[in-house]
Length: 66
View 1 (tube, rainbow, N blue to C red):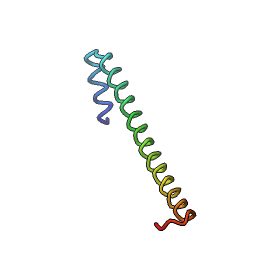
View 2 (view 1 turned 45 degrees about the vertical axis):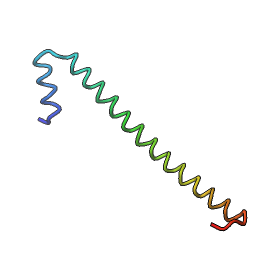
View 3 (view 1 turned 90 degrees about the vertical axis):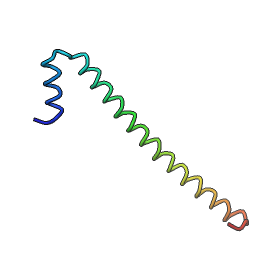
View 4 (view 1 turned 180 degrees about the horizontal axis):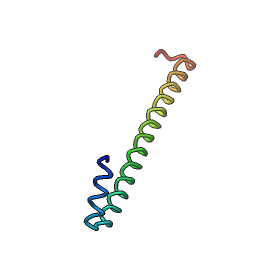
């Protein structure tokens, strides 16, 4: 029996289903937040790389020295 099953069994035995539901909701919300932040940081890195490449392109084609 894994740890999650043991926790669920203990909560059900005590009849505290509201706390179990709140825990599941909070865990899901926290997981979604972590995934959203990870994707946001990745998008920010891609945008930064795009802006750098665009700046390099503009410097190469405008005659300025890098």
